[in-house]
Length: 288
Image (cartoon, rainbow, N blue to C red; front, side, top):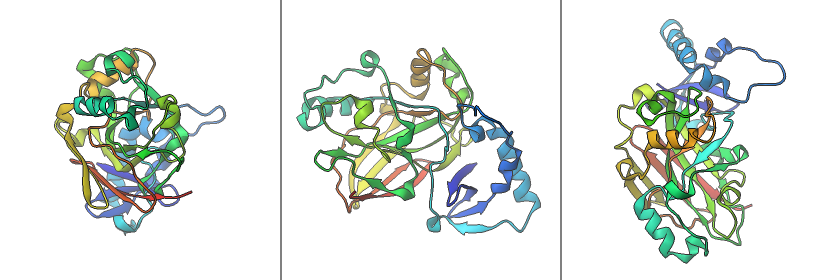
């Protein structure tokens, strides 16, 4: 199943180029009072929501239908507790980062097994339709396409052998980056610098996430093309690694790293990012 959030926080079932409004399905979510839970309620109850979506679609003919292209697409996850990101997780990107001073900015670029993962601010999350506003026009700002896994079941010290059982679904991600000497978490956390979308594809739809093609173009020119088979740490290994340090909760975002080909973007550019089975995001770059 492919679910999107759109317009004023509506829930949609994606069917090809159309979206059926199934917002009524979220009425089954449990109600909470303060303090609110620190995980995403929809993702924590995704199985029940999907069952209600199926019931609505099979029993009601009056559900509104929209063209996907006409909607304002929001991040498919509304309230993630944290964004876990993998640095230099493709060998060729590790090589290009070490060789290009404009990328490494005199920072040491180490292997992921040694430097570990890092966290991005949840306030940096946006959907595809919002576009990206360049946060530091005085710096180089780069695109980075990534496969994103959304945690569906909480866990700590999760072994790689059953790590994918903790994944609710997948989406396309853009880990936008301001180049400079600061720590990654700071340079990758401006507002809008974590773009997720175009929708959430539930894990049962993805039979093998170790062989997915990634493609990113800027104004129609191919900048990044790779396959997840080239990840140094695949999704399962990343979940094992991250959960050895902290508990992963429903709705937490795991960004798996970008391949080679990162490059600078400018206001007026249009990015198109797509991954096998997860759809295509079109994202415009804006000036402040």
